[in-house]
Image (cartoon, rainbow, N blue to C red; front, side, top):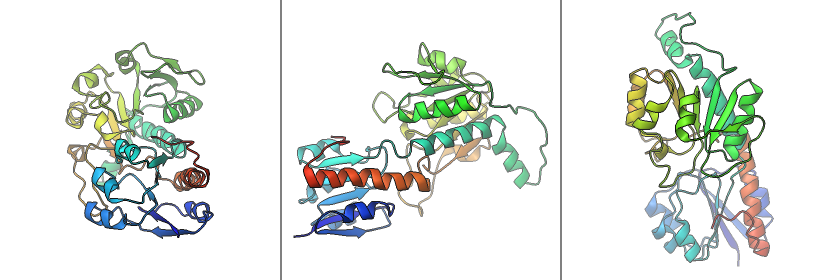
Amino acid sequence: MSLKVLLLEDIHESASPILQSIANVEIVRLKHAPQADELHGLLDGVDVLGLRSRTRLDRAALESATRLRAVGSYCTGTNNLDLEVASQRGIAVFNGPFSNTRSVAELVIGHAIHLLRRIPERHAAAKRGEWLKNAKGSNEIRGKVLGIIGYGKIGTQTGLLAEAIGMRVIYFDIEACLPLGNARPAESLQALLAASDVVTLHVPQTARTRNLIDAERLAQMKDGAVLLNLARGHAVDIDALHEALRSGHLRGAAIDVFPAEPASATDMFESPLRDLENVILTPHIGGSTVEAQRNLGVEVSEKLRDYLASGAIRGSVN
């Protein structure tokens, strides 16, 4: 009897050779993220499922997958999966927490430079035929303070890159963390916000981080500071951020994740931030590099292979 593997959302080809090393394996690939009705039908007879962040694997989907033994989440987060139900049904879930770390950190630094130089506004003006050649409100990143909220894998990597280009790094985390390089912990979140020229979020999706950056927290930030969120969409109150940007309290923002995101590339992206020129909006691409996706294909597939071969649960999130 063959072991059926279903890979959704155009998972990188680096996954295939590793999964093909499993005895009697049959691999089916799809490029899209199926909606609920289609997904339930696709899961019939599937032993191993590979997906990314746009496929929702809820209770109903898991209960329809009577043969499912393991799930590979070829991304960092697992918020689109019902881990409790997966555990109840004996389904092991694996993700790739390390593979996209560098890609996200590099994008943070790139966005920070663009915002401190007011590139978004100058870019928009040039496209309109306006020539804004001046130094007004434009600063070097060297010597500026980077405040990192959430000093985990991506937060620490971001801090090291920031130090390499001359930034001073402070961080805040609810757990005690070993600082890397010359980074130092802030006494409180409020202290970090008040001291930072650039604030970047790297927090998980939990009840505690919902609207972590709200109107009150935004008011605590320095005048002319910039905010970056490449973590979880629910962590920032978008309406409050819109007002902080519109009023000029914040110089700019870069947002890669949103409370509600389009289910597919054909759906319309809606956000009140679209009407502001001092904002960089990107479609959840923090980890979307060739290198990160290749690494995810290898990292997650190796965990699935080892689990199926010997029951190894290294890296299981449940």
